[in-house]
Length: 247
Image 1 (cartoon, rainbow, N blue to C red):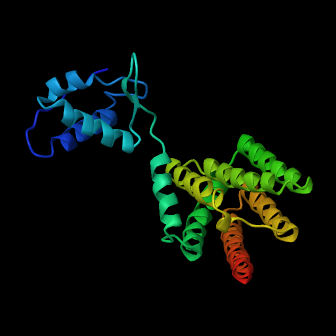
Image 2 (image 1 turned 30 degrees about the vertical axis):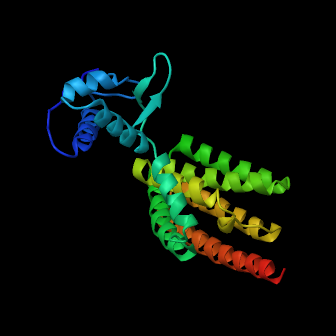
Image 3 (image 1 turned 120 degrees about the vertical axis):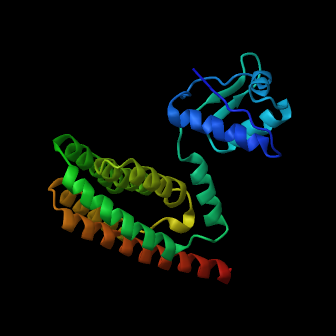
C-alpha cells in the first residue's frame, strides 16, 4: 500500500485529508482491505493534529469508504465501495415524504424500460437460463401461497434483468431502489392473490421478451408493468389509510 500526501494548512484541514484518501482510492494506491496508517502516523504525514485526522476518518466512515475497528489491531480499514450509504439517504427521503408514488413510478418507467431493452440486446444462453430460473422461483412461491417469498422473487427478477443489461450504474441504482424502498416499506408493497397473480404473469412476459431478444417489446412490457404496479400500489395504500382513519 502506498499513500503519498500533499501537506496543506487551512481551517478545513480534515476535508483535505478526506480528499487525498479518496484520490488514493481512485488511483488504486489504496484497495479494499488495506489498513490506513495510525492516527498518529497520519497526523505526522499531513502535519496536522490527531483531532483533525480523527474528524477526517469519521467523514470517511460516514461516506462508507472505511471501517473503523477498535481494540488490538484496530484502526481504519478501506472497505469495498457500495450503495449502502446512498440507500440510507434514500430511505430517509421516503420517510420524510419527499419520494412519493408518482416520483417512483416516473423514475422506474424510464429506467427499467431502458434496462429491459439493453438486457434483450445482451442476453445469452446462460443469462436466459438464469432469468427463467428466477421467474420460476417467484412463480413457485406464489403458487405455494408464499406472498412474501413471491415479492422477494419479484425483486430478484428485476435485479437479474439489470445484471443482464451489463451496466453497473443501472444495476446499483435499481438494487438500491428495489431493496431499500420497494422491498422495505409497506406503502410500496402489493397484496391480494389476484393482484400478485397478475404481477407474476407480467414478470413472466417481461422475462420471455428479454430472453427472446425482443428489445422494444421488453421495454414496453417493463414500462407497462411498472405503470400497473404503481397504480395498484397507490390504490391499495389509499384503501389501507381509509381503513385506519375509520378505526
